[in-house]
Picture 1 (tube, rainbow, N blue to C red):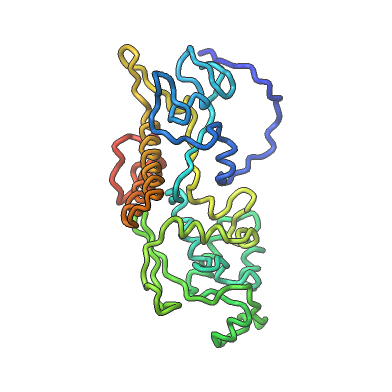
Picture 2 (picture 1 turned 90 degrees about the horizontal axis):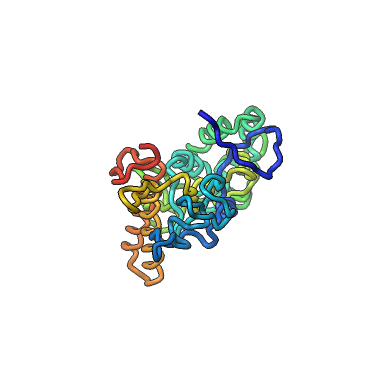
Length: 331
């Protein structure tokens, strides 16, 4: 079988290394050719691919007579280009959910500081022993933090709380790292839902148990410092905890999800395109209801639907969730 090789103006270079990471929202936007994002679930307008729709002509070509509006290539030369959808609210990425819960149990629910000071000798020992093994580092830090039910505060807070021990196990004096000294909740997962429950409340008006939204988790993660990201086994240049949640969804290029031509000129859209349409519809409904000032339970239901569609485009066989009607992502 002969291979089709197209010309490319980019010079050849030897691969020196492969760096893995998590795409940041800004990186997804930079990769995207659909400025402002995909906003319409419709595919065609007046018989032509709709700008800002799911067959946006900037993302590639759909037939032999078309030209790409980004690279001016045809079906043989255009590789396709990514688009994006700006989500109205953050949602959990199912591939990172367990990791997100681990990180959440390592940091303060209120001030985002590590529950154990980075100056703690045990933390320093973990960092020294896990050089080049970031996954092991997170596991060890998690083991150290998971039993903590209070955020280690500064020296003044510790004095006010009357904490008995101001010394580490090795005899060195504990130094505060600017924590808030507040009681921490237990985090529990059920399917795609998280709950936070407090054994000891911080204020009389505080509820003991709340549903934990992806938006609240995103706010906690967003305030984790780069220095503490490193302690958690992440390189902030390539991966941060807040990037584990989806705020900007990449939309695959058209060649990844080609339409199948049926009898005559009828086209049957790819399952991925159908699923992306569900996401855009749910996202638009959420935006509209927020603008109209809809009731909290309606907004909550909109977010749940958006979360379901984003989760099932990644994995359509999640335990405890109904399967999406469209067969997606190889399932």
